[in-house]
Length: 253
Image 1 (cartoon, one colour):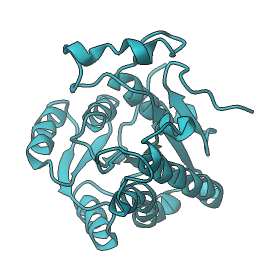
Image 2 (cartoon, one colour):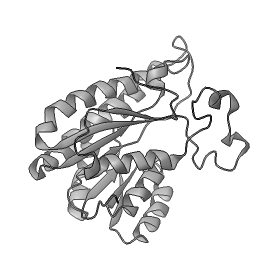
Image 3 (cartoon, one colour):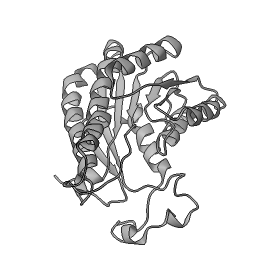
């Protein structure tokens, strides 16, 4: 059983980042044409573009601020004019910041997480869902986090943004499901990506001892989950929050 996304156009936000680049490569490996979004990482996006084009699919890079409506709308128009309307949207971008306690975290950090988590998903839906509705087929896949279930010290700004986007996406799944559009979330654990691969930090014993599989997962594990949710194999799955964390967090019933 193969995942075939041929003749589908996808857009991945934060595509030049640690998880984004692997998600992008994997969707291209499945045959999807891909719009590679970046905010500041143009050089990395251009390098990824060359990789993706070598796989024999169409691709482009596009710059946008996913927390700004005019910027997201301009991105939508650029992609539609070059590749066609995306029917697979992967909302992966997130603002990075220094974690600290609630009492010490700046208000600007909370606002930044709101914009990159909640507003990104709202604006991307407004920009890209109408074309999916016309085609009666679509996949919206957002990257959440195991932290949204953990609520550990120093995670408050990140958790507040991710839990906010969870609420938006569950409502969206109900609102546009009748058009055969699914809306799901993949929640990574502390994955091994290029940042850690082959370094002394690749293994984190204190973290791994609490993971039922007793190890960290890989960026490819996240990309595999995204590709599955983007495919017809997941046509009857919507409104889901799916941890890919080796069992480190387990949603209850």
